[in-house]
Image 1: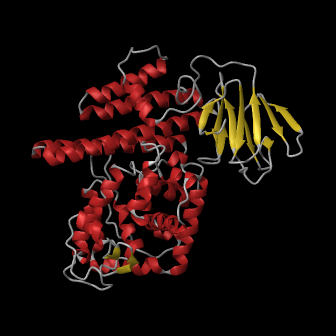
Image 2: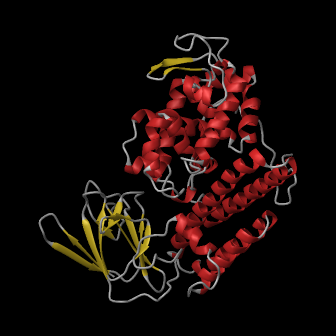
Image 3: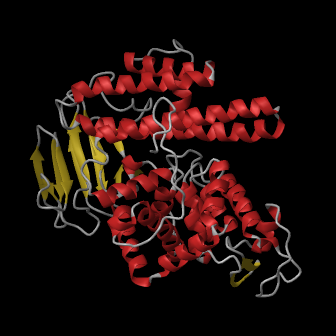
Length: 488
């Protein structure tokens, strides 16, 4: 592999590599390039034994080939890699040609080197086996997804187990070559978003079944949802085995876990996000507002009711911290005036949204005052309405991204809806990381999302973060792989 960099003065610096190397501004990088747009470790060029690949280490929208953003793609012939928008360009070329089906996380799209979208992944693997020539690994995955489509929900566990067995078996070879770990992590990332797509489709099907089916059918669907959660638990264990949590501090592990609970993929979480959450944890420590709000929640018994409402809606109970950010658990809170009127109650519903989700709006809705006839101030009813609203955002526009749900809740569904709908309709390309990378998000909304996430992280283990607090979420039962309660 030959890398050529053109300096600001027009001179060219050409270097040859025979092993994986990292390009970035840090001194330890094999190819060091200084520049405002260049990250300490920007991209990695690696070889799988057959072909060369390039991996973006700087985050979404930070590395481009021919103007197109990249994450992890094969290199063919010569490529012009731009480090950041308007940043320096590195020319990469090699003489060897790769095999027809390189050992990699997924095959490149026909006719180019772009990555497949999650919709294309699902379409590819659900196609009947034998439709077109394919490699052995592709045929295995295609058969697995065909089984998911044809068999009943009680077979899901076995199908995912078979898929994971394929990946773990591949890990025996990958262990001998360090760069293969990156390929396997990319595979885990792809499987996460493919699984997320299937989960969304299941949730949308639930809405139809629960609205029209007989009680016994609804119960069967609930069992299917529980099995899907169990599969997600197996995926989480697989990611831990890959080392996603192994090289970070204990505090950072909690940040990754909370992001995962809100439906984000821990494999591709930007490092800057982890640092920002740690910064917001310190902000909570300085203002003391968290302790006051949590004591109020405990005094009035909010935790049990709110947790139950979100759990019954199939949502993580950590959404309780959205009410913390909105009102500090003040059930009589009245917000500032907006063009939609006053937001009121613990969940700060405006009149239009409150009415849409079944709340009676009182006669004093145009006044900045508490109104006992306004059900936005009836916190149990408002909590159930909030759970319905958040579930609707989750299963439709937000594509399962909890952080995108929070941004929508704060920024206003109407304001953010147009931006969200302009993003591709799949969880990999429509999430909070893509929103902040490609769009101008107000600072207020970033603060809002990071405050909620950091509060959830603190309450996972308050003493670890130096807080003397009690988590408002009641302890959840710990179920083992046989369905037994291991909480004790």
